[in-house]
Image (tube, rainbow, N blue to C red):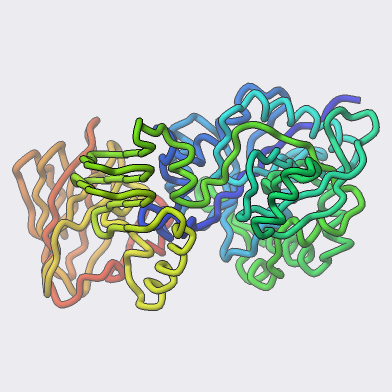
Length: 476
């Protein structure tokens, strides 16, 4: 019997609040280059390059991230089906709609479930484990990959190994799933050799997973089927039916299926894995200097030891620090004891309660056509730096409450300004009165950069009336 096609399912919907201020709601950690020049998402989709029998992956993400996800996949030349979740409903429903989408494309593929924000150093070991997972999945088992622990870890759930799987090297029946333990219990788990970290990576046949969901969570499966049936095409994206998916119960794969099925197996995996769940994890995985420090960006230090310091845009100077994390961005600075970085979540909750933009956006905001960055603002004015990618253009739009003045500093701009269409070169400008229909386009081969000065009584991003948009947006 020939092996099934493997469809990677990339779960890219998280928000990564523990890595604030670098990770924000509209620019989460999976879209950031935290460990090398590629983002965590790009590293994930590149992980199965060269693995035989792999089909087009399915990537599941938040609709607000869709253009960044698509652009990052394009940068690594990866074709993918991108499913947009209208609301977050945890991993079990996400994988259910991915299974339904995969079955619309293949006969009965094996799904390889991968969170988009994990780090794996030894990818050869990862690929070897996939071979064992495929053998089990072909027989109808539901596979989870358990990470071989090298230290007592209280931040992960655990899996206890049961009996070896007959005729499959390296696989075990799952005896039990265990919640995050205290330190003494975790030490006991490590010494016993019977426990593995729960990685959140899975492998199983699409129909087999749906059969188990039908048995253990029928309401969830029904809602997911309705959401998939109600899907719509939006450019290169697949939008799930919002009403149906919104009424879907929220649950993880572990709770909904894996802890209940009698077909759960675990394959131990020793591959230099991390879920990059905190700034301390990045310090552990970083290249430490002779004082145990990891520095990113422009950092000057005196008598600093075992610290992680990340400078995004400015010089950061530190004196006399030990076991601390310092992260600088254009609009926020985090300073935390390294053993307290998990409590960054509490800061994020405070920011949410105060409706602060620092939890949602960076000063640089990405759009499908490029990006903009707020340079200065005060009552009745705002100054932005706008970058438009070659061949890209903004929507045809108007504003009720503000006028705009554009000054080109690099490249060439084609501008619709009311009834006029004009071409602007460097050092040329145009003024757009309040209420006038306008559009900006880059017809050139290099990025277009301009300075935009807004003036008016209200300068919010929601003061946009769109008349035409090549990206099909009505939400930003």
